[in-house]
Every structure is written in structure tokens, then in C-alpha cells.
Image (cartoon, rainbow, N blue to C red):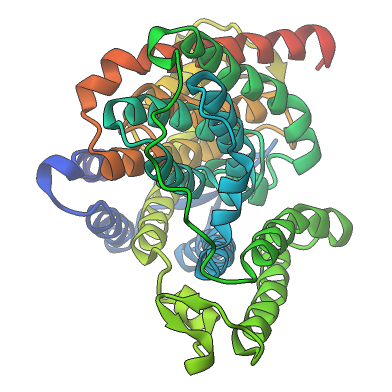
Length: 453
């Protein structure tokens, strides 16, 4: 029956990967695959296990194992719901228009460094997907030449993915590792920040020397855009500060991250309601005066949450959990490490090759990095803050930049600017590969010679 389980998973995975060809949203095969896998386990009475680090597989009842995995998945989903809502509240007040104030130059090279740096920093706070949307929207107002915008969008994808890799709140995969108690926020930043900087700086430097980024941007873009709300800047900084507060809350209270995110959401939502109902407000939101009637920013923001993404994460995480519960991932990890050259270091009697982790990064350019990291969590039974987890966070987060379909940032940029797959492959992929390899080399050097772990 294990063979049937694997076949169902592979078929479901193919349907997810080929969603654009099949024209079926990836949440559909993810949810279907998850339900079918657990149904097979239940109907055939397959033995399920709880994988205990340092112990191995321990048999448990199906209901208990499923409830355990549902609880761990719910922690991630509730955290993401809170973060998404805060971002939507910021957008409700047009807070992201504040970023445009930081862009003063018309020189293409300087503009490239500014938007890439903003993508790197913002993605570490509001996630790489949102950072990409915000910056491409701003670029569409600043640069009318579409061919030039495509180059900027490509470098934004690289920088946004690099920025999300070193922050526990910057990418779904790093958030998963953080919530699963595989990494702590401080040590993750210590190990992955510098490699991530190299990952975006090297490609940006190379690109800035290319002819396409010589000269100045045509001065035909409108500079008349003003924030729709007088509280735009306030809500922008308040929202970012609330999200940054979450890791601090966890380190002080030792409570799960979603608790801190709910506290931050409550704080931001309270100010949003106060500002929205203020009789002194003279701004307009969504083209309608606030004085004309009170519109709850929280309700409006919740209605814009990407529920398809939430349901996709639910399906894929519980589907991977089914394989983990059968012990398949645990067994596969052993086979993988025996067959791949051992370039890594011995950790808790488990050897994880650097080449294995880098292959995960390359794989994330083709396959969604969320299930890859979910599988890694089930495969590798090593301790908290072992360097392998940090390398996985880096590789899975940045490897997706090598193809435009390899990351959420790439997919959304592809949709916003109608970027051709092969154009990106010819023009940007090699830059992303250089950045990925540069950061990986820096990580290994730091681990072996500077951090001494």
C-alpha cells in the first residue's frame, strides 16, 4: 500500500506543478491529494508513527497522529492569516505609498540599487510576495518603458527571495522552520543574513554594470500620486513594527509565534478602527470619503485575504504529514544521505550533505518550496539550530529565483508584468544562479571557519 500512497502523492504533486498547463488552481489537487492519502491510511489500517528526534519511529493511533499534524499546520495557517491581515490593513490606508518617498533618483543604476535594497528589507518583514507586489506597483508609476521594467522586476524577485530567507517572518518556509522549533530567530539571522546579502548584492552589482541600466529613466512618469489617507505613513510604520514585534514576543514569553501575531493584529486593528472612524479625517479610501460613512478596515482587509493560498498550505502540509506519519520521509532521508556525496558535517549521528541541501534549493526552482521544506522537516531528525536547518532555509528560500515559476514572488511578477518564462530564463536565471551559489559558498565558509559549528 505504501507504493499506492507514493503514486497518489506524485500524481497530486505533478498536478500542482502543472497548474498553469492544466488551468486548475493548485489548491484543488493539494486538498484532494491530502484527503485521499489519509483515507487510504485509514481504510487499509496502515500503521502510523510519530517521529521522535534521537529515538526514531514510535507507533501511535491514527486519530492522535492526524490531530497532532493538524495542530502544527494550524499554527502556521493562523500565523499567516494574522500577517496577511496586517498587510491588508496597511494597504487599506494606502500605507505602501510611503515607500515611493524614498525613491528620488532617475538614474537607472541607482534606482536598481534602491528598489533591490527595498525588496530585500521589506521581504524580511512583510514577506517576499507582498514586497514584490508593492515594488512592481511603484515601478509601474515610475518607469513607463516596459522592457526596462522587466529587468527591474527580475532583480526584485532575486532580492525579495533573498530577503525572505534570513527572516523567520519573511517567507513561508522560514516561518515553517521557526514554528516547528527547528530554528530560533536570532541564530537564523546570524547564520543566514550575510549569505542572503551576497545572494542579492552580487547579481545586482553585475546587472548594474550592464548597458540596460546605463543612463536615466525617462522623466514621463507622474509624480502627482499622493496617499489616499492622511494616516498612510502612520499605519505603514505601525504595521511593520507590529510584525517585527512577533519574534521579540516569542523570545520573551516562549509562546508559539501565532499568539504574538494575534496580539500584533489586535493592536494594529484597534488603531485602524480609531483612524477609520475619526470625524477629523478628510481623506478618501477606495474613492469614497471616510466622513461619508464608517467602513471597518478590519472587515475590508479580511475580505481580501488570499484564502486559496491558505487552503493550499493546509492541503500540502497535511499531505506531506501523511508520508511523514508512515515513516517514508524518515527512511528516504537515510537513503538520500547514503547515496549523495557527503560534503556536510556530522550532526547528532546524522550526516546531511551540503550537496543534498543545495539540490533542495535547485529543486525549489521547479517544485514549490513549501512541500520541499515540509518534507525536509520530516526527513531530517536533527536538533534545534543545527546549521543544516539554516542552510535549508537559505537554499529553499533563494533557489526558487532561478526560474520565474520557482517562487511566489516570481509567479506574481510574471502575472503583473506578463513576463515570458523563456525571457526570464535567458536574461535573469543566470544572475539568480550566481547569487545562489555565492550565498551558499559564503554560508559554508562562515559555518566552517567563522562560526565554528
